[in-house]
Image 1 (tube, rainbow, N blue to C red):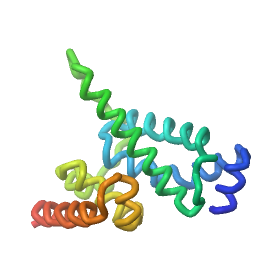
Image 2 (cartoon, rainbow, N blue to C red; image 1 turned 180 degrees about the vertical axis):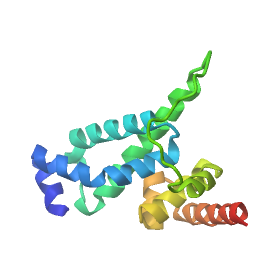
Image 3 (tube, rainbow, N blue to C red; image 1 turned 90 degrees about the vertical axis):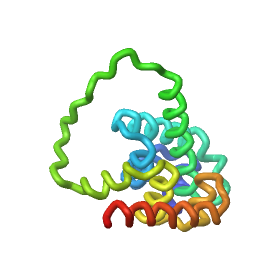
Length: 163
């Protein structure tokens, strides 16, 4: 992956495309833990990809690419949430999904959705994406002790949910 990052930093669009395709699933999971609608998730991911392409030259350490990219993604998700809070809906039309998930991870997703966003995001980044607490601290711009606390409290809330 380091060679892809290096080639992408030199302006190789094919290397950048391949790099982003490798990251799509993890970006989707992280964005989905913050945002509830797939359209918003898609917007956040596409804006993140664009920013990564435009600012890849600013990345100092290639080893921290995923942390850097995830930080941009979380910021885009928060931007979308802020914009949604400023909009008042006159009438809300229920969305119909074309994708029938049946029973795929329904209990896990329902349990996660019941958690406060800060706990849900910390758990997703730690358990699903495999980030270390130090990396999550950088991504969320909070002290590492706060990340550990959010993980512990998130686990406690999940334990109550499944008890």
